[in-house]
Image: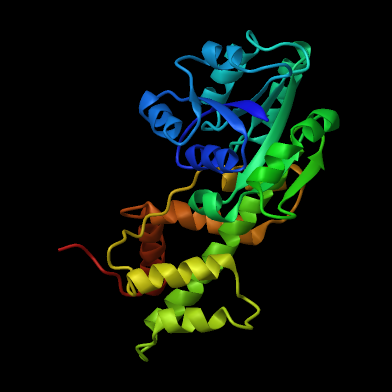
Length: 299
C-alpha cells in the first residue's frame, strides 16, 4: 500500500522502516526535516508539508498519525480534514485518551473521513519484534487498512476491538496493567536487594525466565537492565508517566471499578518525583505528638 505517515519520533521512525521492509510505499512528514531526510535514505518519500504529503497519495488515501496525545493530534486532524476526501482514512497510532478519540471520530465523520484509533505497543523493540496493535473504528475502513496492521504486527499480534475509541481504550488498560506489573517487579527486586545475603539479582532474574510463572518480556528487560548496572547506580529514583495510567484510573472511577494495584502504582510514580514529602513529615509529627515517638530533625 502507499500511505502517508506523520510523526517520526522514536516509534514512528521505526514503524515506517518496518513498513518499508514489507514493501509498502510511505510518504513521510515530520516537524523536523532531519528525520524526514534520514528515513528517505531508507526508501521513504519525503514531503515538505502535510499538503504535499496528501497530494502524493493516490486514490483512497490513508494517513497514519504518530504524534503526542492532545494538541498535536488535534492540529494535524484539523489540517487533514481540509485536505482529505470522503472515504479517506486517518489512523491515530499514538496514546490518545479514548474519550477524546470518540470526539475526533465524530468530527472526522462530519467530513466523511474515517478515523481509526490504533493503540500501538512495542516501544523501541518494535522494528525487530513487531508491534501489538489494538484498533477501533469503522470496520470496513479498518479492513481496508489491514495490510498495514499485518505488516507492523507479529503473527496474531493485531486485533480489531470495535467502534471508535475502543482501540485506545484497550491500549490504555494494557498500559495500566503494565504499570502494576512493573511496580510488582520493582518492589520484589528491592526486597531481594535489601536482604543481607548479597544476592546475584541478574542471575536470579535470568533463572526466573525458565519455567517460572512470572516469566515475561518485562522480566527479560529487567535482566538486561540488571546486567548493565546490577545496583542501578547510574539511575535516579525518579519515574515519569505519560498519561495512560492516569486515564486508566479515571476510567476505573467512571465505571466503578476498584483498580487498587494500578492506582497504587501510579501514585508510587508521583511519590518518586518528590525531593521532600510534606505528608511524610506530617506523619512523623503526628506520631511524635500522640506517642512521643522519636523523629529525625535537620541539623
